[in-house]
Image (cartoon, rainbow, N blue to C red; front, side, top):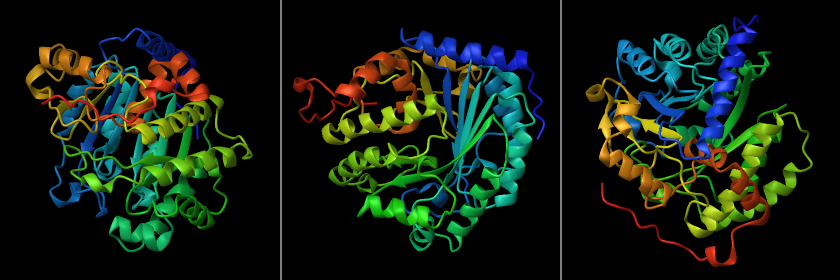
Length: 379
């Protein structure tokens, strides 16, 4: 596969991205990371997601192109859904993202229910001048459990084929992972769950599993509060998993290993206290836009701030409004639902890198360890 990205283009995008990370240490006001829900539509019928019950197709292609054109400063774009690859104009959307912004990292999850289509989409994306592409194939248990959770017979086999096809692609600019979300539907024995998944994915290294925690997200997944996993079971699992991974071969790049390891070490604190372990960087480093182009602080806080159609599709204009400024301050002070999803936690870690490193290694101060019930403002 011959990449069509020049060294000069990749360098400029890399410089912009790392400059964004440096600026984030000082609480910049323009997010460099966008999580955009391209569509609610998906061929699965997941137990912990209700999007499929009343799916929104998402904005028109020309509107999405205007969104990216109005926000050229974006350097990290997460396209999500629904299943973004199932949109017929997926390549046009990705092309607009790459050509209209200085994106350095683009990532998206997929249920992997159309293996050939996903592979073709990734191959086409790698023909664009994009330095880093990351795709996560969702698998939430061994075949029988996964099919039940996804509401579709044969879902596991199709997801496995998708991951195998993606793993066979050879590009230094591309990485594929298996995404396993822990929820109340599969958390009875987390360690056994992981072992069972790996047993059905021959050749997949343990470090290729990317874990996530199900959260209550009323404006996104429209799911139930009791879909979240059991805190005590997950804390015990994470302690054991850290020890297991110390002995695993190290094929993942160091920077990603550090980010993933820090995320999960701090996840233990989140699970124990019910509070984000770091001041949230939502609306400073990251922002969430739904399928109707409404702007929210993140995937879990149901606080609509603006519709991009009303502000010329500009995130800068949307976030300059008084309510958005207040929401950013509330998020930083953790006057919000508090969460620890990778979409928001990863930029938060990168925005507080020195503090995150110390916290992950040494833990919270003793006076911070008591459980906390967040003060959630209305909105």
